[in-house]
Length: 490
Image 1 (cartoon, rainbow, N blue to C red):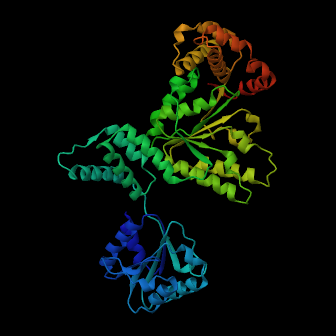
Image 2 (image 1 turned 45 degrees about the vertical axis):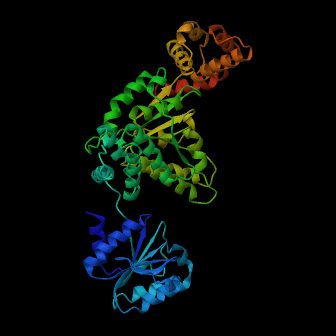
Image 3 (image 1 turned 90 degrees about the vertical axis):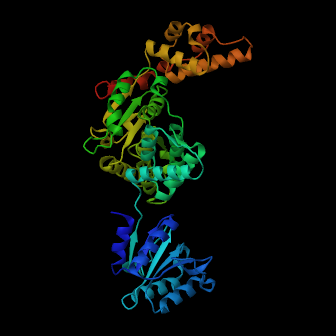
Protein backbone atom coordinates (compact mmCIF):
# COMPACT_ATOMS: atom_id res chain seq x y z
CA UNK A 1 0.00 0.00 0.00
CA UNK A 2 1.27 3.48 -0.93
CA UNK A 3 0.24 7.10 -0.44
CA UNK A 4 -0.81 7.20 -4.08
CA UNK A 5 -3.10 4.20 -3.59
CA UNK A 6 -4.63 5.65 -0.43
CA UNK A 7 -5.31 9.01 -2.08
CA UNK A 8 -6.80 7.25 -5.07
CA UNK A 9 -9.35 5.57 -2.79
CA UNK A 10 -10.22 8.87 -1.12
CA UNK A 11 -10.68 10.66 -4.44
CA UNK A 12 -13.08 7.94 -5.57
CA UNK A 13 -15.18 8.56 -2.48
CA UNK A 14 -17.76 11.31 -2.02
CA UNK A 15 -15.69 13.31 0.49
CA UNK A 16 -15.62 16.95 -0.67
CA UNK A 17 -13.05 18.32 1.81
CA UNK A 18 -9.70 16.70 2.63
CA UNK A 19 -7.43 17.88 5.44
CA UNK A 20 -3.70 17.04 5.30
CA UNK A 21 -1.33 17.97 8.12
CA UNK A 22 2.14 17.87 6.60
CA UNK A 23 5.20 19.97 5.82
CA UNK A 24 5.82 18.04 2.59
CA UNK A 25 4.00 20.44 0.27
CA UNK A 26 5.96 19.58 -2.85
CA UNK A 27 5.44 15.85 -2.40
CA UNK A 28 1.70 16.39 -1.92
CA UNK A 29 1.51 18.52 -5.08
CA UNK A 30 3.36 15.80 -7.03
CA UNK A 31 1.00 13.07 -5.78
CA UNK A 32 -2.12 15.05 -6.65
CA UNK A 33 -0.69 16.02 -10.05
CA UNK A 34 -0.33 12.35 -10.94
CA UNK A 35 -3.83 11.56 -9.71
CA UNK A 36 -5.39 14.57 -11.46
CA UNK A 37 -3.96 13.41 -14.79
CA UNK A 38 -5.16 9.87 -14.06
CA UNK A 39 -8.71 11.10 -13.24
CA UNK A 40 -8.75 13.62 -16.04
CA UNK A 41 -9.60 16.62 -13.84
CA UNK A 42 -7.72 19.92 -13.48
CA UNK A 43 -5.59 20.52 -10.37
CA UNK A 44 -5.33 24.01 -8.92
CA UNK A 45 -3.01 25.28 -6.19
CA UNK A 46 -3.68 28.37 -4.06
CA UNK A 47 -1.37 30.42 -1.83
CA UNK A 48 -1.98 33.82 -0.34
CA UNK A 49 1.13 35.11 -2.14
CA UNK A 50 0.41 33.93 -5.70
CA UNK A 51 -3.31 33.38 -5.79
CA UNK A 52 -4.79 30.49 -7.79
CA UNK A 53 -2.89 28.64 -10.53
CA UNK A 54 -2.91 25.36 -12.41
CA UNK A 55 -0.52 22.91 -10.73
CA UNK A 56 0.08 20.26 -13.44
CA UNK A 57 2.06 22.66 -15.63
CA UNK A 58 3.77 26.05 -15.40
CA UNK A 59 0.72 28.29 -15.68
CA UNK A 60 0.56 31.96 -14.78
CA UNK A 61 -1.11 32.44 -11.37
CA UNK A 62 -4.32 34.43 -11.02
CA UNK A 63 -3.06 37.06 -8.60
CA UNK A 64 -6.50 38.66 -8.35
CA UNK A 65 -7.64 35.52 -6.49
CA UNK A 66 -5.07 35.82 -3.69
CA UNK A 67 -7.82 36.96 -1.31
CA UNK A 68 -9.29 33.86 0.40
CA UNK A 69 -12.93 34.97 0.08
CA UNK A 70 -12.58 35.88 -3.61
CA UNK A 71 -10.84 32.59 -4.32
CA UNK A 72 -13.59 30.56 -2.58
CA UNK A 73 -16.33 32.51 -4.40
CA UNK A 74 -14.56 31.75 -7.68
CA UNK A 75 -14.44 28.02 -6.89
CA UNK A 76 -18.09 28.03 -5.79
CA UNK A 77 -19.35 29.29 -9.16
CA UNK A 78 -16.95 27.25 -11.28
CA UNK A 79 -19.01 24.98 -13.57
CA UNK A 80 -16.27 22.35 -13.97
CA UNK A 81 -15.03 19.64 -11.55
CA UNK A 82 -11.56 20.14 -10.13
CA UNK A 83 -9.19 19.55 -7.23
CA UNK A 84 -8.10 22.64 -5.31
CA UNK A 85 -5.04 22.50 -3.04
CA UNK A 86 -5.25 25.34 -0.49
CA UNK A 87 -1.80 25.71 1.05
CA UNK A 88 -1.45 27.18 4.57
CA UNK A 89 -5.13 28.05 4.75
CA UNK A 90 -5.32 27.41 8.53
CA UNK A 91 -5.21 31.10 9.61
CA UNK A 92 -8.32 31.83 7.55
CA UNK A 93 -10.51 29.15 9.15
CA UNK A 94 -11.38 31.55 11.98
CA UNK A 95 -13.36 33.70 9.56
CA UNK A 96 -17.10 32.79 9.48
CA UNK A 97 -17.34 33.91 5.83
CA UNK A 98 -14.60 31.51 4.74
CA UNK A 99 -16.11 28.66 6.74
CA UNK A 100 -19.53 29.26 5.17
CA UNK A 101 -18.11 29.38 1.64
CA UNK A 102 -16.21 26.10 2.19
CA UNK A 103 -19.38 24.49 3.50
CA UNK A 104 -21.42 25.65 0.50
CA UNK A 105 -18.77 24.34 -1.93
CA UNK A 106 -18.80 21.00 -0.08
CA UNK A 107 -22.60 20.81 -0.09
CA UNK A 108 -22.59 21.34 -3.87
CA UNK A 109 -20.17 18.47 -4.45
CA UNK A 110 -22.96 16.19 -5.68
CA UNK A 111 -23.74 18.58 -8.53
CA UNK A 112 -20.18 19.64 -9.43
CA UNK A 113 -17.26 17.71 -7.91
CA UNK A 114 -15.12 20.62 -6.70
CA UNK A 115 -12.87 19.05 -4.07
CA UNK A 116 -11.01 21.22 -1.54
CA UNK A 117 -7.73 19.91 -0.09
CA UNK A 118 -6.44 21.95 2.85
CA UNK A 119 -2.70 21.46 3.44
CA UNK A 120 -0.90 22.89 6.46
CA UNK A 121 1.43 22.01 9.35
CA UNK A 122 -1.62 21.99 11.67
CA UNK A 123 -5.34 21.97 10.89
CA UNK A 124 -8.44 22.07 13.06
CA UNK A 125 -11.62 21.34 11.15
CA UNK A 126 -14.43 23.77 12.06
CA UNK A 127 -17.56 21.95 13.25
CA UNK A 128 -19.62 23.50 10.43
CA UNK A 129 -18.09 21.21 7.78
CA UNK A 130 -16.43 18.52 9.90
CA UNK A 131 -19.02 15.96 8.76
CA UNK A 132 -18.14 16.77 5.14
CA UNK A 133 -14.38 16.28 5.54
CA UNK A 134 -11.78 13.57 6.04
CA UNK A 135 -8.19 13.55 7.20
CA UNK A 136 -5.24 12.06 5.37
CA UNK A 137 -1.65 11.57 6.53
CA UNK A 138 1.37 10.74 4.41
CA UNK A 139 3.02 7.47 5.29
CA UNK A 140 6.48 7.58 6.85
CA UNK A 141 9.08 5.63 4.87
CA UNK A 142 9.93 2.12 6.09
CA UNK A 143 13.44 0.68 6.14
CA UNK A 144 13.15 -0.66 2.61
CA UNK A 145 12.23 2.77 1.27
CA UNK A 146 14.99 4.44 3.31
CA UNK A 147 17.59 2.07 1.89
CA UNK A 148 16.26 2.92 -1.58
CA UNK A 149 16.64 6.64 -0.81
CA UNK A 150 20.26 6.07 0.25
CA UNK A 151 20.93 4.25 -3.04
CA UNK A 152 19.21 7.00 -5.07
CA UNK A 153 21.16 9.81 -3.42
CA UNK A 154 24.45 7.89 -3.72
CA UNK A 155 23.87 7.35 -7.46
CA UNK A 156 22.87 11.00 -7.92
CA UNK A 157 26.08 12.14 -6.21
CA UNK A 158 28.21 9.82 -8.36
CA UNK A 159 26.61 11.01 -11.61
CA UNK A 160 26.94 14.68 -10.68
CA UNK A 161 30.66 14.73 -11.45
CA UNK A 162 33.29 12.71 -13.31
CA UNK A 163 34.91 9.74 -11.55
CA UNK A 164 33.25 10.32 -8.18
CA UNK A 165 33.48 7.18 -6.05
CA UNK A 166 30.96 6.63 -3.26
CA UNK A 167 32.11 4.86 -0.09
CA UNK A 168 29.78 3.23 2.42
CA UNK A 169 30.22 1.21 5.57
CA UNK A 170 27.57 -1.52 5.49
CA UNK A 171 27.01 -1.31 9.23
CA UNK A 172 26.66 2.47 9.04
CA UNK A 173 24.12 2.22 6.20
CA UNK A 174 22.11 -0.29 8.22
CA UNK A 175 22.19 1.95 11.31
CA UNK A 176 21.30 4.98 9.20
CA UNK A 177 18.21 3.26 7.79
CA UNK A 178 17.13 2.48 11.37
CA UNK A 179 17.90 5.97 12.61
CA UNK A 180 15.80 7.67 9.93
CA UNK A 181 12.67 5.70 10.80
CA UNK A 182 10.00 8.13 11.95
CA UNK A 183 10.95 11.13 9.80
CA UNK A 184 9.24 12.19 6.59
CA UNK A 185 10.54 11.10 3.22
CA UNK A 186 11.51 14.66 2.32
CA UNK A 187 13.50 15.14 5.54
CA UNK A 188 15.11 11.71 5.19
CA UNK A 189 16.24 12.48 1.65
CA UNK A 190 17.67 15.85 2.70
CA UNK A 191 19.60 14.35 5.64
CA UNK A 192 20.98 11.53 3.47
CA UNK A 193 21.99 14.00 0.76
CA UNK A 194 23.79 16.26 3.24
CA UNK A 195 25.69 13.28 4.70
CA UNK A 196 26.82 12.04 1.28
CA UNK A 197 27.75 15.46 -0.10
CA UNK A 198 29.95 16.14 2.94
CA UNK A 199 32.60 13.55 1.98
CA UNK A 200 31.12 11.14 -0.54
CA UNK A 201 30.55 8.46 2.08
CA UNK A 202 28.21 7.07 4.73
CA UNK A 203 30.12 6.47 7.98
CA UNK A 204 29.40 6.00 11.67
CA UNK A 205 30.06 9.71 12.22
CA UNK A 206 27.27 10.53 9.76
CA UNK A 207 24.88 8.32 11.74
CA UNK A 208 25.65 10.18 14.96
CA UNK A 209 25.16 13.58 13.34
CA UNK A 210 21.92 12.53 11.66
CA UNK A 211 20.63 11.17 14.97
CA UNK A 212 21.10 14.62 16.50
CA UNK A 213 19.53 16.30 13.46
CA UNK A 214 16.54 13.96 13.70
CA UNK A 215 16.00 14.98 17.32
CA UNK A 216 16.14 18.66 16.32
CA UNK A 217 13.51 18.02 13.64
CA UNK A 218 11.12 16.71 16.28
CA UNK A 219 11.41 20.00 18.23
CA UNK A 220 10.16 18.81 21.62
CA UNK A 221 9.26 21.71 23.90
CA UNK A 222 11.63 21.36 26.82
CA UNK A 223 10.32 18.33 28.71
CA UNK A 224 12.58 15.85 26.93
CA UNK A 225 16.21 16.41 26.05
CA UNK A 226 18.78 14.65 23.91
CA UNK A 227 21.81 13.58 25.94
CA UNK A 228 24.81 13.94 23.67
CA UNK A 229 27.37 12.37 26.02
CA UNK A 230 26.65 8.71 26.62
CA UNK A 231 29.20 6.78 28.66
CA UNK A 232 30.65 3.39 28.00
CA UNK A 233 30.61 0.61 30.58
CA UNK A 234 34.37 1.13 30.84
CA UNK A 235 33.65 4.42 32.61
CA UNK A 236 31.46 2.70 35.21
CA UNK A 237 33.22 0.96 38.08
CA UNK A 238 31.53 -2.07 39.60
CA UNK A 239 27.89 -2.87 38.76
CA UNK A 240 28.97 -6.20 37.26
CA UNK A 241 25.52 -7.80 37.59
CA UNK A 242 23.93 -4.90 35.73
CA UNK A 243 26.57 -4.99 32.99
CA UNK A 244 26.04 -8.72 32.42
CA UNK A 245 22.25 -8.27 32.40
CA UNK A 246 22.46 -5.52 29.77
CA UNK A 247 24.92 -7.44 27.58
CA UNK A 248 22.56 -10.42 27.45
CA UNK A 249 19.74 -8.19 26.20
CA UNK A 250 21.58 -6.01 23.70
CA UNK A 251 20.92 -8.21 20.67
CA UNK A 252 17.21 -8.82 21.45
CA UNK A 253 16.68 -5.09 22.00
CA UNK A 254 18.14 -4.20 18.59
CA UNK A 255 16.50 -7.10 16.76
CA UNK A 256 13.95 -6.50 14.00
CA UNK A 257 12.50 -9.99 14.44
CA UNK A 258 8.85 -9.56 15.57
CA UNK A 259 9.04 -12.95 17.32
CA UNK A 260 11.72 -11.64 19.71
CA UNK A 261 10.32 -9.60 22.59
CA UNK A 262 12.24 -6.41 23.32
CA UNK A 263 13.47 -5.88 26.89
CA UNK A 264 11.36 -3.09 28.39
CA UNK A 265 13.48 -1.41 31.02
CA UNK A 266 14.99 -1.30 34.49
CA UNK A 267 14.79 0.76 37.66
CA UNK A 268 17.99 1.78 39.43
CA UNK A 269 17.47 2.37 43.13
CA UNK A 270 20.27 3.56 45.33
CA UNK A 271 22.00 6.18 47.39
CA UNK A 272 22.71 9.64 46.01
CA UNK A 273 25.97 9.87 44.09
CA UNK A 274 26.23 6.10 43.76
CA UNK A 275 26.49 6.14 39.97
CA UNK A 276 22.87 5.63 38.89
CA UNK A 277 22.96 8.48 36.37
CA UNK A 278 26.26 7.32 34.90
CA UNK A 279 24.84 3.80 34.64
CA UNK A 280 21.80 5.13 32.74
CA UNK A 281 24.13 6.82 30.24
CA UNK A 282 26.21 3.66 29.98
CA UNK A 283 23.15 1.56 29.10
CA UNK A 284 22.52 3.78 26.06
CA UNK A 285 26.20 3.67 25.17
CA UNK A 286 26.27 -0.12 25.42
CA UNK A 287 23.16 -0.51 23.27
CA UNK A 288 24.59 2.04 20.82
CA UNK A 289 21.37 4.06 20.69
CA UNK A 290 20.35 7.65 21.50
CA UNK A 291 19.67 8.63 25.12
CA UNK A 292 16.66 10.84 25.86
CA UNK A 293 16.09 12.33 29.30
CA UNK A 294 12.58 13.14 30.53
CA UNK A 295 12.38 16.15 32.85
CA UNK A 296 9.26 15.77 34.99
CA UNK A 297 9.63 19.31 36.27
CA UNK A 298 9.18 20.70 32.75
CA UNK A 299 6.08 18.55 32.16
CA UNK A 300 3.81 20.28 34.63
CA UNK A 301 1.53 23.04 33.37
CA UNK A 302 -1.05 25.09 35.26
CA UNK A 303 -3.74 24.42 32.65
CA UNK A 304 -5.87 21.30 33.06
CA UNK A 305 -4.90 18.59 30.60
CA UNK A 306 -1.71 20.29 29.38
CA UNK A 307 0.59 18.28 31.64
CA UNK A 308 -0.75 14.98 30.31
CA UNK A 309 -0.47 16.29 26.75
CA UNK A 310 3.16 17.27 27.38
CA UNK A 311 3.85 13.74 28.62
CA UNK A 312 2.13 12.15 25.63
CA UNK A 313 4.17 14.33 23.25
CA UNK A 314 7.39 13.42 25.06
CA UNK A 315 6.62 9.70 24.87
CA UNK A 316 5.71 10.09 21.20
CA UNK A 317 9.09 11.72 20.61
CA UNK A 318 10.79 8.74 22.27
CA UNK A 319 8.89 6.34 20.02
CA UNK A 320 9.94 8.25 16.90
CA UNK A 321 13.57 8.17 18.08
CA UNK A 322 13.42 4.39 18.68
CA UNK A 323 15.50 2.39 19.18
CA UNK A 324 16.55 4.54 22.11
CA UNK A 325 16.91 4.65 25.89
CA UNK A 326 14.48 6.90 27.77
CA UNK A 327 15.93 8.03 31.10
CA UNK A 328 13.45 8.98 33.84
CA UNK A 329 15.78 10.68 36.29
CA UNK A 330 14.75 10.84 39.97
CA UNK A 331 11.35 9.54 39.01
CA UNK A 332 9.94 9.91 42.52
CA UNK A 333 10.06 13.72 42.21
CA UNK A 334 7.64 13.63 39.29
CA UNK A 335 5.42 10.72 40.29
CA UNK A 336 5.44 10.74 44.08
CA UNK A 337 2.16 9.44 45.51
CA UNK A 338 -0.03 11.74 47.56
CA UNK A 339 0.61 15.00 45.73
CA UNK A 340 -2.26 17.44 46.24
CA UNK A 341 -2.33 18.65 42.63
CA UNK A 342 -6.00 18.26 41.76
CA UNK A 343 -5.46 14.81 40.28
CA UNK A 344 -2.71 15.77 37.81
CA UNK A 345 -0.22 13.38 39.42
CA UNK A 346 -2.68 10.47 39.21
CA UNK A 347 -3.42 11.23 35.55
CA UNK A 348 0.31 11.43 34.80
CA UNK A 349 0.83 8.02 36.43
CA UNK A 350 -2.11 6.59 34.47
CA UNK A 351 -0.78 7.95 31.18
CA UNK A 352 2.71 6.59 31.82
CA UNK A 353 1.51 3.17 32.95
CA UNK A 354 -0.74 2.80 29.90
CA UNK A 355 2.13 3.68 27.60
CA UNK A 356 4.51 1.32 29.39
CA UNK A 357 2.04 -1.54 28.95
CA UNK A 358 1.05 -0.86 25.34
CA UNK A 359 4.15 0.52 23.62
CA UNK A 360 5.47 -1.45 20.67
CA UNK A 361 8.49 0.70 19.82
CA UNK A 362 11.98 -0.27 21.01
CA UNK A 363 12.18 2.26 23.83
CA UNK A 364 14.18 0.97 26.79
CA UNK A 365 13.24 2.71 30.06
CA UNK A 366 15.86 3.45 32.70
CA UNK A 367 14.28 4.98 35.81
CA UNK A 368 16.51 6.18 38.64
CA UNK A 369 15.27 6.74 42.17
CA UNK A 370 16.72 7.70 45.54
CA UNK A 371 13.56 6.88 47.52
CA UNK A 372 11.36 4.19 46.04
CA UNK A 373 8.91 4.39 48.95
CA UNK A 374 7.59 7.67 47.52
CA UNK A 375 6.54 5.94 44.31
CA UNK A 376 3.04 4.54 43.77
CA UNK A 377 2.91 0.74 44.25
CA UNK A 378 1.43 0.16 40.79
CA UNK A 379 4.60 1.56 39.20
CA UNK A 380 7.07 -0.74 40.94
CA UNK A 381 5.17 -3.99 40.83
CA UNK A 382 6.54 -6.85 38.72
CA UNK A 383 5.92 -6.43 35.03
CA UNK A 384 6.34 -2.65 34.85
CA UNK A 385 10.13 -3.00 34.69
CA UNK A 386 12.11 -6.09 33.77
CA UNK A 387 14.21 -5.71 36.91
CA UNK A 388 14.92 -3.40 39.84
CA UNK A 389 18.63 -3.06 40.64
CA UNK A 390 20.03 -1.68 43.90
CA UNK A 391 23.13 0.51 43.57
CA UNK A 392 24.89 0.48 46.94
CA UNK A 393 27.95 2.42 48.12
CA UNK A 394 31.06 1.00 46.42
CA UNK A 395 33.25 -1.56 48.19
CA UNK A 396 37.06 -1.28 48.37
CA UNK A 397 37.79 -2.87 44.97
CA UNK A 398 35.22 -0.68 43.24
CA UNK A 399 36.49 2.44 45.01
CA UNK A 400 39.99 1.62 43.76
CA UNK A 401 38.62 1.42 40.21
CA UNK A 402 36.73 4.72 40.63
CA UNK A 403 39.98 6.48 41.61
CA UNK A 404 41.69 4.98 38.57
CA UNK A 405 38.91 6.12 36.22
CA UNK A 406 38.76 9.71 37.50
CA UNK A 407 42.54 10.15 37.50
CA UNK A 408 42.85 8.78 33.96
CA UNK A 409 39.95 10.96 32.79
CA UNK A 410 42.05 14.00 33.85
CA UNK A 411 45.20 12.76 32.06
CA UNK A 412 46.86 11.74 35.34
CA UNK A 413 48.65 8.37 35.40
CA UNK A 414 46.95 6.21 38.10
CA UNK A 415 50.10 4.08 38.37
CA UNK A 416 51.76 6.93 40.29
CA UNK A 417 49.23 6.66 43.13
CA UNK A 418 48.70 4.26 46.00
CA UNK A 419 45.19 3.28 44.99
CA UNK A 420 44.88 0.68 47.73
CA UNK A 421 45.54 3.32 50.39
CA UNK A 422 43.03 5.71 48.82
CA UNK A 423 40.42 2.93 48.60
CA UNK A 424 40.87 2.20 52.31
CA UNK A 425 40.65 5.87 53.30
CA UNK A 426 37.49 6.39 51.24
CA UNK A 427 35.40 3.74 53.01
CA UNK A 428 31.77 4.90 53.04
CA UNK A 429 32.22 7.40 50.20
CA UNK A 430 30.03 7.42 47.14
CA UNK A 431 31.45 7.59 43.63
CA UNK A 432 30.54 11.29 43.46
CA UNK A 433 32.35 11.89 46.76
CA UNK A 434 35.48 10.20 45.46
CA UNK A 435 35.43 12.29 42.29
CA UNK A 436 35.05 15.45 44.34
CA UNK A 437 38.10 14.49 46.45
CA UNK A 438 40.17 14.16 43.26
CA UNK A 439 38.91 17.50 41.95
CA UNK A 440 39.56 19.26 45.27
CA UNK A 441 43.11 17.89 45.37
CA UNK A 442 43.72 19.26 41.87
CA UNK A 443 42.46 22.71 42.94
CA UNK A 444 44.71 22.64 46.02
CA UNK A 445 47.76 21.59 43.99
CA UNK A 446 47.14 24.40 41.51
CA UNK A 447 46.68 26.95 44.29
CA UNK A 448 49.96 26.19 46.15
CA UNK A 449 51.91 25.59 42.95
CA UNK A 450 53.10 22.22 44.25
CA UNK A 451 53.66 20.85 40.78
CA UNK A 452 50.89 18.27 40.74
CA UNK A 453 48.52 16.15 42.72
CA UNK A 454 49.66 13.05 44.61
CA UNK A 455 48.34 10.36 46.95
CA UNK A 456 48.88 12.50 50.06
CA UNK A 457 46.90 15.44 48.55
CA UNK A 458 43.88 13.24 47.76
CA UNK A 459 44.12 11.55 51.19
CA UNK A 460 44.05 14.98 52.83
CA UNK A 461 40.88 15.91 50.97
CA UNK A 462 39.24 12.61 51.98
CA UNK A 463 40.02 13.24 55.64
CA UNK A 464 38.50 16.72 55.47
CA UNK A 465 35.14 15.34 54.35
CA UNK A 466 32.55 13.19 56.10
CA UNK A 467 31.58 10.20 53.89
CA UNK A 468 28.01 9.78 52.71
CA UNK A 469 27.62 6.71 54.94
CA UNK A 470 28.00 9.01 57.96
CA UNK A 471 26.03 12.00 56.68
CA UNK A 472 23.06 9.86 55.63
CA UNK A 473 23.51 6.90 57.93
CA UNK A 474 19.85 6.38 58.86
CA UNK A 475 18.48 6.93 55.36
CA UNK A 476 20.97 4.51 53.81
CA UNK A 477 20.21 1.87 56.44
CA UNK A 478 16.48 2.09 55.70
CA UNK A 479 17.10 1.95 51.95
CA UNK A 480 19.31 -1.13 52.30
CA UNK A 481 16.76 -2.86 54.52
CA UNK A 482 13.98 -2.27 51.96
CA UNK A 483 16.11 -3.35 48.99
CA UNK A 484 17.58 -6.49 50.60
CA UNK A 485 14.71 -8.82 49.68
CA UNK A 486 13.10 -6.80 46.88
CA UNK A 487 15.86 -5.92 44.44
CA UNK A 488 18.88 -7.37 42.65
CA UNK A 489 22.35 -6.05 43.64
CA UNK A 490 23.76 -4.10 40.72
